[in-house]
Image 1 (cartoon, rainbow, N blue to C red):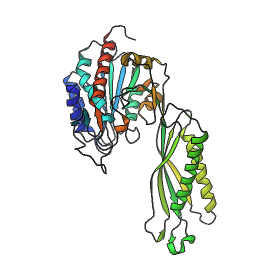
Image 2: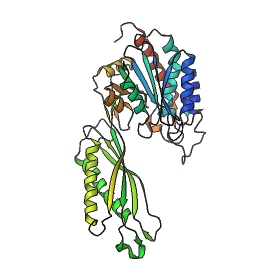
Image 3: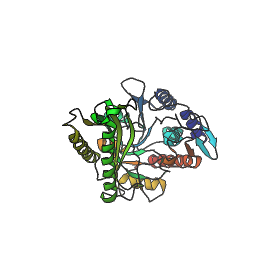
Image 4: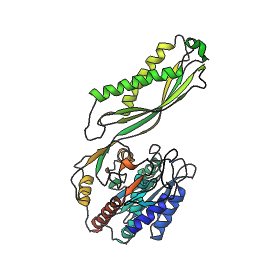
Length: 387
């Protein structure tokens, strides 16, 4: 595990917050692969400040196993870290640092295994896929998928290394994010009834959203495989108004919907849109400018892989386990599955409960388990005739 820890330390020192470039880390990985005789392809964004990386080790004309991870991390501002978040601090059999669990630990394990990948006589290739801007809506990976849609040979399976404590995850929820922009009419606050308070309109709609949430919780589709077994609606941001003595004419808030199958986020959103239209209609005769406009800002599909599928059986054999699970958080796996029909599971070191927090950490035991899994993968793919 020494090499895994060394590489993880290097990766953590790249401050790849989603708002910033990831190119220093990508160039580090590309150079590392090149030292082991492996060429890689970069798929940049429009600015050239960010890029995905894709590499194939072994016979490129045969479908292989994709190991997929994202290189970006969430910000640290406003969090009380006891150590430098962009460094590797070893304490109590764990490595502390932003991205250690989510998900540079998995990437470090992959890179540490590269010499074994390169030296093995692989009957099927190993694909390495590293993306950008996952944390802000699985954005960057879409360009990689555009490239793969044109590829002559796709991987056979995809393993997303998000932190699952090395448990096999076969499903996660779909997500839709939207911005609600509310327009009212300004007035002096001493004459408040002559205006239309945009913040109050926002609260009217939020009340409808909360009622819809209660309905779904009480009588909607439930799946006990998830920690939260039903579809959720969540208002996460809100802003409006300029001064206390002005009736505000504008307000906006951010809405998130996370759906369990078979619920569809667009269908849930349509009910919110209907509620917004009813609220508008109550005021437009007196205030024609009254508006509650809803714009979708991001969506990604859920993941739903059959527990008895070939990829799950493949993973059971490597991990020597017979259990599967589902997670409430999203991954890039739904996009690989929906756009490429690529059989996909989520399985990686670390615990999602440690992600996005101050003093984020990953246990050494988890890194060791992932190293062992990759060793077993090399052994499996090195045997001739492997299916």
